[in-house]
Length: 74
Image 1 (tube, rainbow, N blue to C red):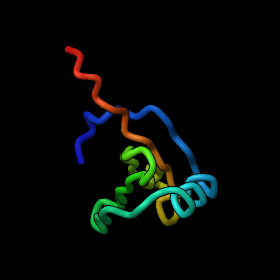
Image 2 (image 1 turned 30 degrees about the horizontal axis):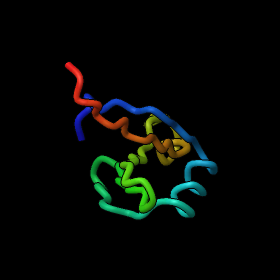
Image 3 (image 1 turned 90 degrees about the horizontal axis):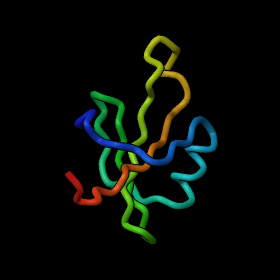
């Protein structure tokens, strides 16, 4: 997964898990990097769930970020 992705919305912890469960469809799980990819069936928007706090037990609370759409500029 490229770190060059830009994100325009972020949810954390239980809020992230609940939003993913209610509104998103699972695309892929990368068990080595602890990254899960989702898509919103209503908008087609892509979401990435990860665990950014590797120093915490279990990677800490999940973080869910919506990938910003490329506007074609630059």
